[in-house]
Image (cartoon, rainbow, N blue to C red; front, side, top):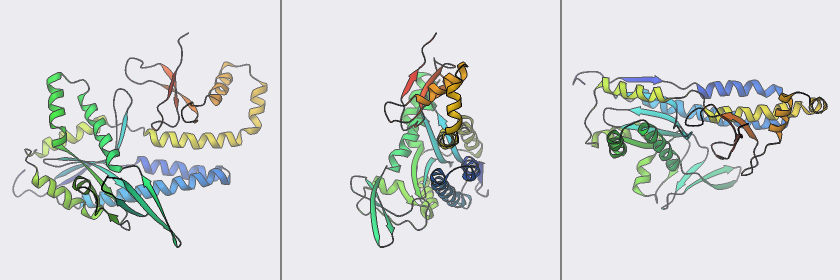
Length: 323
């Protein structure tokens, strides 16, 4: 990079998955009863908050005055089916940042043990609840990215990836709601360094890059690195697809109470029998419905099995025996 070259922020991928999901949810609203409509409206609020939070972060990145490549809404999956949805991957000349965006309502307290507690005020009352650590969540995402990088590599290349991964990559959790107050007075130093507000994002990135002793990448190398992540991205977001399928199934069941009786009367076809069987399959672990899936990778690629609709929270599977 030349001394007099102008810093350039290149948005290699900008999110559209959440916006498409929002459109689908809004289309469902007039098609259902008040009970299911209430669930959809709550989901819409959550999705809109997520979009607003990511827009805040994207604004900060676009105005960073740094050389960087930005990828938004990246989904990477390992060969064994473990997936990581990453809000932002930011490639700078020395460090790659994995950013988890949290647009939380309420104030966040982090104690000395790293526990996250959210306080929400309703009227005159305050309610406290523990929330899953976003640091742990983002570090799990990074481990999946590392595992995906190790796939199909020889022993030497794998050792290099393992040794350098945590020196070249950093996790950041960004609280994107400007009204959220972060109280990390008692938090450990490593927690304070990883959880920041959106208005601290660029200052934090610049500080980490300036302190890094890693060699600088050229713009061409940064681009190649960013494109390698883009190639691994899978557009079909499981979390959105499964939530949408769950809502549509509830609507179909609600509207199908009358014709389900007729379907039971005419049980002559194998297809209708299979559908009824699927309706009765309940996950023994969490109680959610099992759905028919097809393995896309590995030794069982192409084979069908029943998986829990609550994936990835529940990973129960039931194999279908060969005839």
